[in-house]
Length: 167
Image 1 (cartoon, rainbow, N blue to C red):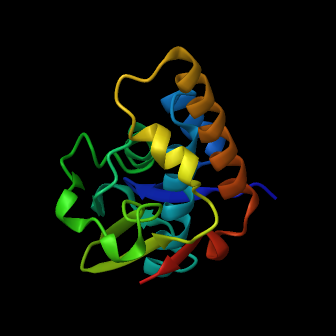
Image 2 (image 1 turned 45 degrees about the vertical axis):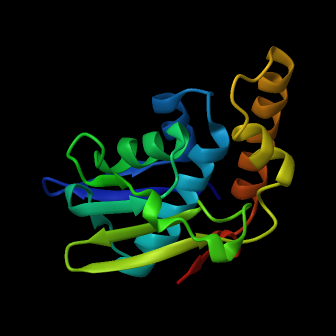
């Protein structure tokens, strides 16, 4: 069964699959895109069990700077366009170590909010090291692209509750 996100806008329901997010973002940051997709599945399920969330009511706070996550949230919620998506480096969770410290999303809908934390086992040290390398060589870029795809595959293959913890 293909997982999908459902949001409500103007009395109607919009449904988004991961492939829909890829059509919006492209192939540049598939790992971050998959992370955002699963983060929304986990957060929306906790905030509005069984019902679609209101698309324009979703707010996001995260230390994660990647374009894949940003575009994933934007495609589904329009939070970037509407100024409801906030990258805040003070939210870095150093207590989680360098592999996971940025993978935190605080998602709010109306008067409720939850924090979702990526679980260990999805992000590799090689991925973080290459992602944080400035002035990457062409070979490093190709390797990073492969690691992004592998991250996306791992994240998408796992059941959502096994990808993100609620904090």
